[in-house]
Image (cartoon, rainbow, N blue to C red; front, side, top):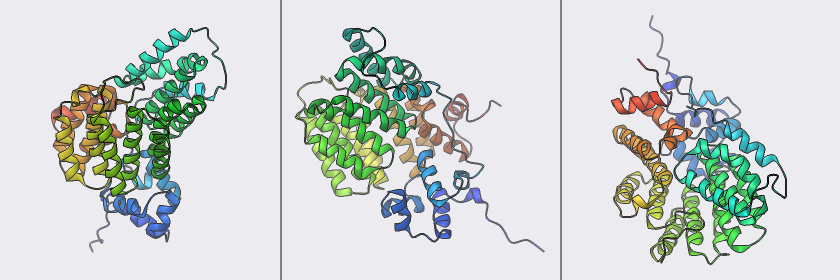
Length: 383
């Protein structure tokens, strides 16, 4: 007698597995959302597959609420690909754990200022291993100058978010605000990192509040515009369509009237930054077709090439996720390859990019150049 067909656990989309396991626990979508600190709309989109679960930190939070091992959500055939070990994160963690008011090493303020400037350049070119190696000494050297310590902690938070260490990024962002010591301009700049870290942690409402509070406290239009941009993305992450569009419109207005290309706070703010933010916001709100149209417009705009390599590559990773959501794996692969040409470490070290690349490979035979990239980053073996 033929046995009844048993559904393969790995063939079930992760969102549907979340829904099934939530139902087994007797939790409504609202109760589940409350425990996660998310909206009911967010949970519904995850369970219907409208939004992707491609951050292992979020998968781990869901598993904790459901009181199960994350592998039960992921399935043994689809483990979350991890980036090659970046030992520098441990060094940064140790540096953040040290509490000293004054630098231990003898470094002049001018030397420290040049080092911080070089660190920003390193970050904007996505040279994350080199940056991680430099940050512990720089965090120490910058202690003698308040503005440099704020800036260094902002860089630290930014790279830790990239590498999926949001809790540690939050610590660095909080240190940036503390270092600002209530100075309005420095506190507003430091709050950019706070909003980014809170968004990475999934605390979109808190990110929105932090960004708007800081935006009201500064007259610097570049920082103010960046904070409106972060607030708009936080609103989108929370499913708040009207606020997301309104806040990004405010950011666009400030970007369009910028009279200078100077960027003393290293925000990369401008019309192109707002355009790529609108792509991410549209995707977060479930408007994938609009996201694709905005992506094509952004990458063809005059300001696209003026964005730092890190920013452009990060956007292309976001675009790859949109293409996967619309069932266009070939375009998703091309977006990842384009990102790899611009800033290789952005693709090869970031967990989110490696997850997307793994999903492309698991869908079936991939284009030769995509398969080669997967081999380079260690997701497949050479034949």
